[in-house]
View 1: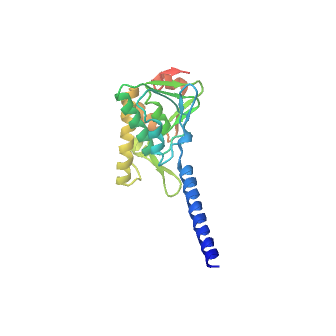
View 2: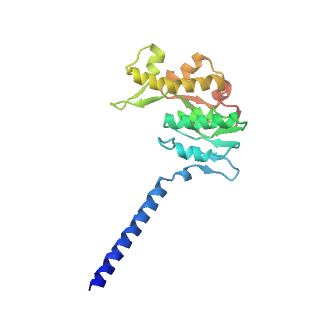
View 3: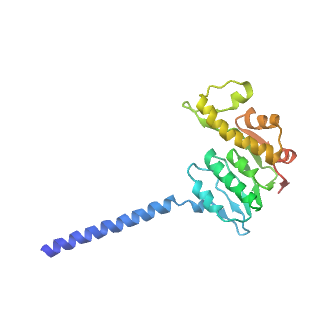
Length: 215
């Protein structure tokens, strides 16, 4: 009887350990998002439709090799901070002499638009659209808060610390538009702040130099 009880206890312990191991494996696999970035047979990389907050590692792992990249961005945007990580990594690769090609078939919006303009070659397909806007966040009543009113009127309801935080991000994006695209200040203000969701057609993207070629 004593041996039988011990056998039951040992069995339960082993079963618990086994279940814990399975549970850990499952939790690890569900947190591994590397399959969200697909690579086509011709080597082009397809970014997922959203830049989710906290997916920094996902993009750094995808861009970890020092080589040329061709990135398809049909993307709604998302986290400004994760967007910045992607942009900085692309900039690092370009400074090492590698060529980055970006391409959009349908839409490159918000953070996705700024990743798109990082390309040395920027391919846009007929009917696709680029959407720029300044950084922002959803306020307590579900309204989007950004620097739009401050840029257009000199007034804002944002707190000084919020203005400072959003300005750091927007200044980075505006510098990119000046360097990569050579847009004038008035044009940047128009596309980033006139509307919170400002869509640019493929024809206009070509005219302004946001895209370098039609696909």
